[in-house]
Length: 383
Image (cartoon, rainbow, N blue to C red; front, side, top):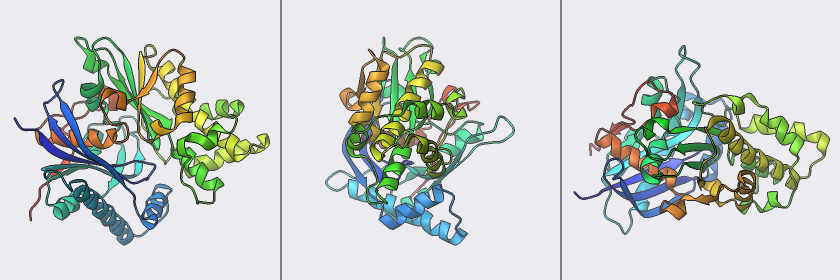
């Protein structure tokens, strides 16, 4: 059977741009094979990025403006899908996560969660002429799940091991983890996953604050590495209730966004930190909160921690994690044959592929949903 060529499209809470992966996929579960043919990140225009960040921060706009932003994101996603195919055979399917602008976890069994991803799949299908799967989160949410994280099942079939317990730690704007037990008779039901808290979101916002918007991130963590973390502040911030909630749990910029950063800056005033010290302290919060979640919500620390996402390229953050984890080696998914930069985009290509052949994509033990669900709405090309 010939592999299926699928494009995965993903833009996370950092709003850095559209991570785009063209892959060939075959198999169904443990025989799943993914070959990356091309990967590229296509940036948003500064104006569109500003609009998206404004929405995430709660800026009030008209419905007409919201529709215009929705269409603009879809156009950008469609262009990314078209560009990634240059020099390659044409894809037959697109999996588009879209751009999250709001996420509200469920409140017990009384209130379903809510998650809004802009960049409508019908428009992407229309512009590209390729069947597109989008709105992956809503089916899990309808089953009383969080709708996040959705990549753990993909992680399970691409990165699990017969003898080792592994944590696959994505560090995007928000951090999320997949705990993979060693494969045994009932291993799938033992997989866990949750949002660990801030990843790059606070760090990026802090860099923008200290540079008056001239820089958007701390390249390689070099600026933070030149500072000294303030541990009393880290301890204070770690007392936030989110870090102590048991999984399943999910979060976003609604919690760890610009308002939270301003609170952190106010907390830091008595310590008279310079910019480098503050960035080092925010970076330390990301590292400490990740390890804190392992120690509190896993049966034991894993044999390996494997990083992916933009934060995996932050050497200072990676070194802090390694120091905190002691003899648990920290590496990236690149070492295991899966691109760390494009793993999330690859995951949504796989989820679209599964949806197209009627395989559920969620893990109820991770999201809290009451059953497995087919994830994503299919938008056929009618041109």
